[in-house]
Length: 390
Image (tube, rainbow, N blue to C red):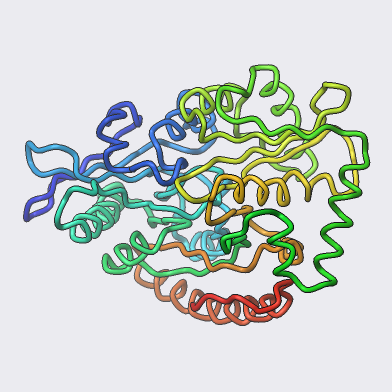
């Protein structure tokens, strides 16, 4: 597919068709979730496949006969599961009116509600924004040529969002909970920035978590053994069963991801007599620790908070990271120092009537989410509230 002016846009059924050099030259090193290593591990392990409704259709943009200038992780979706930005009601309404919502295009990191870049442009090009808009436009044209209903880009960073909007996409607002490092030198330094009651509560929770007779271990990169991953996969399956979800990720995915991402993988384990009984998986970017999966084989009060929230803060402080992103959902995170932060997605709806209805819905939803975030911010445990602007 060629732009009438100068860009050549192509779709690829495997990230290997693009290659690690070309992909990572565009993706950079800041966010591990859009790296070749992470995305190829999803494909090579079978975690992302046509069988589970994720058809790989990565998109690339280049000058004619020139090198690749931009890429984006793109998938044809046969359903809306594993996305964390829900459009089931749009699909139901459209199909009730006689339309066909699926398949659609999804520009995202599968099963990962992690904000980050979605339009990946080589940093050495001069017209970066123009190329990003062209790539976003190319997704819509591809969707039209394939008779797809829509294109959805979820958990976009600011640059990607602005480029999607310039290409005519609709903006959607969401909320997650993030912890910010204000130059803390220790966990106690962080606690001293909280109100007295919240400070005492966190100390009490950590004390109880450490009274279960468990040993806490943090492993990074190649310190994590195949045995550790075997245990962690059991934890992952246990969490999926508890939440009535689908175990998209295979055990091979964790092994391949660890091999390809190296020290960007951080695993926090709780052990009982040398045997892991709980774990929390994190990935580390240039300045952010991203919380991912968690699970255990038993119940210990406050162990989840210790491994997923407090140990993550400890690690971020020790490694001079500026932020911890603890994933989707969970208003209980506020009382543990993780504040409401806005997230964004972008949506191109091909059908004019459906686009009109979705646009009206998103405008109403954004106002409600803004009001909710403002209310939640009032429960901040900090001595002075922090609040972002919508």
